Length: 518
Image: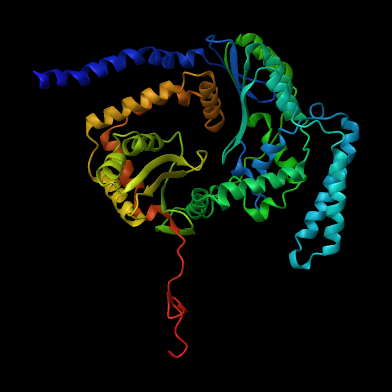
């Protein structure tokens, strides 16, 4: 009797899950009909979605410009620009812009001269550097007379803003905020001003800030250091191999002119998407957006020439020595969305590492107990161009990366030779659908995803078609994609190896022959 009762439990849970998710599926299916898309005269695309659940609105501005679009030798420009965009405009952050502008010009000139002298390295004139440093410091002190620090943040905060932030990736740059819905015009005034009249205040101070950010996130962070070397090895020609923060030798000499040039490229209207989701009147919201954003001049820009990564013809291995416990990263080259194989790798990601019932977790964390964690990520480090299916793993002491890599290889090989059982595949699909639809529950989540796919792929409807495409994926499709891409010659492997003190024998360092040995 107990066995019979237990047999009904999975069926009951499945029915409950379907009943709970029915409203979400209905909302997702209705999403395409509720999103309203417009294109302004200058090329800015606008996505509007009315959701009167609370008197708030989430607002996203995304630009199709990121680290991949930087000029060679200027890595880190996109990220530094993102920081500078919070420094205000000709009307925000200043007591008197006319007077401030003259000081900023002098700072720009002096900073450029100082960098040029420093670039000479051993041939630099120490006296000239000292003189220019003193002059720059004096100008920065003078500039404080006109500066109103953090005024943009203050305006937003005083008007009920939440989640105000920005982000720079390999592919895109994003600015977002959530506000009371009666503050849309305030947002439009601020953001259109930022897109037309930014002022790069405290430039050299902020450049030092991002250098410190690099030290914290890369130089002294084992995971960051390993990831940087991993991507640099995986992408030897394509700019995905350069870090978003930039290489140190580039970062320390970025100029106001470099950032200004990148800004004019990034803010091009045809590269820009605005999304507003929440308690809005679409007609009125569009009128406000037209009023403030349509006067930004249209631009003609040449499509960027991005060096293609040639097909990989052999496994690449990287070893990073660091005073930390071992870590492992493995990446396989694959196509970007909207290729069918990219959808399949979303499914493979879920099969291998989504939740405690995933194959990696059950095998390596629970079963063999050789891993602290094993995770996967499809589409690293970006999605505009061919990218990686990546695996990130940490062995459990006393096990090592070598042993963990062998276990991972065994699970990947299983995908290439055994079709995923229909029941397992359907369970994974149900998980993916539930997680995906749940992510559409918030205004911010919807605005983020709509704007992301519109600017990345050129069509937000990738979002509305996603579940339908996932449903078409078969065990045979999964196995074919695994056979095509999960090959040793198509992968890069990076390991973090703990720094160990050298062994000592008879007072001699290891590998050094005694003096009397020939």
